[in-house]
Length: 65
Image 1 (tube, rainbow, N blue to C red):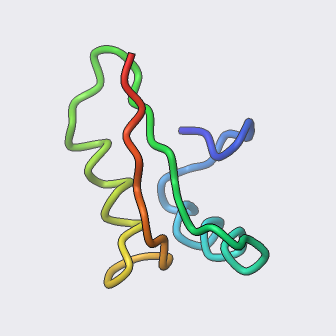
Image 2: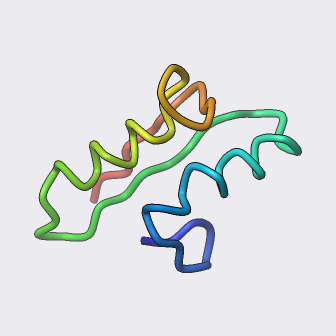
């Protein structure tokens, strides 16, 4: 998984997102899954970024082909 251009482990994602939203004015995350990736991996990222359960991201946008 990547956050911006940097690789990040899913276990570090919440903390990294929390650091990013401190300086961001627009709390939106864009999620793009690689071809063949099971949706549960995408759902896990969305859950981590969720307002109630994760880092406080207010909007999630899915990028499609």
